[in-house]
Length: 208
Length: 371
Image (cartoon, rainbow over all chains, first blue to last red; front, top):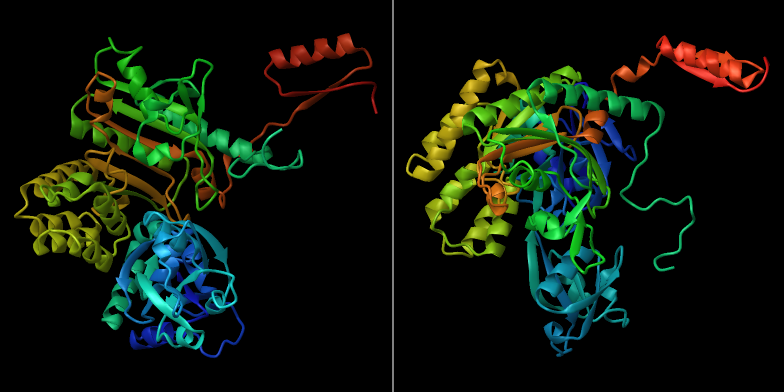
């Protein structure tokens, strides 16, 4: 940051391959085979490789000037960052799913138990529909929760839907659609305008 | 006792305490900033720490306000901001004083807020309000004061990011969005997300050309030349165009005053829309991820207290200013050395210490005989 070089926060997870392809398409440098290194310094850019849920945090605090995060993660984090470009890759849906064949009305429950990695999104979705929820916060393998009786339904991201089917679940309703977004720190956007705007334009063009 | 069990040394989230150089740095910044406020003929107000809750009725803050019931059953609140209190004082105690009024304050506001990227439950703010007066001149004045403060405290690469809520308002004039839709739209404009704006407006009856104008608005940020782009973009929308012209007039004066390199235009800055009526400003210092100050024009507020006056105000957060200057040697390094006063006879020790103090020396009184 202080040396004028921009810092980019990227997810080590689902969006990594798409991010790399985007940078290469844009003619920007990208770390090669860095293995387990989490901070990689290249002549023009510094890269931070972090958990996908943490990308908005690094950018909101200005530790990274920019980052790539899924809309699903941004909805959950509620971070105060700019989100100027839909990068188009990493498309998925945030859905409510339940065991196939259970017919009770999820939107008419006294208290609904929801297993999810997205407690904020899930709570907001059901509360705004007038349903009290008890969120069962899980870090992964959310799909098994209804079958084991841990929850009535789940809120999770779906790409192909295969995992849902394999775990005997069906989609009830969509909560949101998601894709990878370029996010930018507000202060860097204004106080470091020229290089930040150049990077945004370069990535937007490569994404189009 | 109610509430969660805690150890006595535990601190509740959102509070801070400062010691040593942290304090000296903050007080040095505060002294410099307040001296500049005084230098522009602003007068300090010490408002109450709490007041009736309906004084602070901004919807954006009410959810974050500490309120409590007084002995007589009335709902009271710890101040979540200063502006409402100063407006009340301007209409009340200072009601007979002719406008313009130049007022400033320095102190803590309290909010339910978990610590996060520059937010705390207890925030120390230094701010000024210019109530009444010619509006463009008032806007220019408070920005000039802010610029002098930033220069004086040694901030580098600082930016005044200026917007005007009238542009957004003008584009949506007559579009009949309900409060929830407007809120969702504002959040998406604030995020500068073109797809998000289209998604929100797609579900409404807003005309496609208005949608595209709002998308354009979110993209209108950068140097002062952005105002020319904005004029071209909104040539057919008189209300939005008028707001752009208003901002351009202000910017021309600031550029003439040599502040051009510190200005950014951001017409997508639409936060606090239910409160601000014209200019909005956010102040950034390079290297710090969040703003060090903010403000804007709020012509509607004083009317609530029965003294309708146009008004503009601006405040700095002491913590973010201190954080922005952290890498640099601060004025706290200049603490004068103390003269040690020591005497087996306490009376004689006091006499000597008082004499040293009368001469202006910093003293340190040590009990007992020579070591």
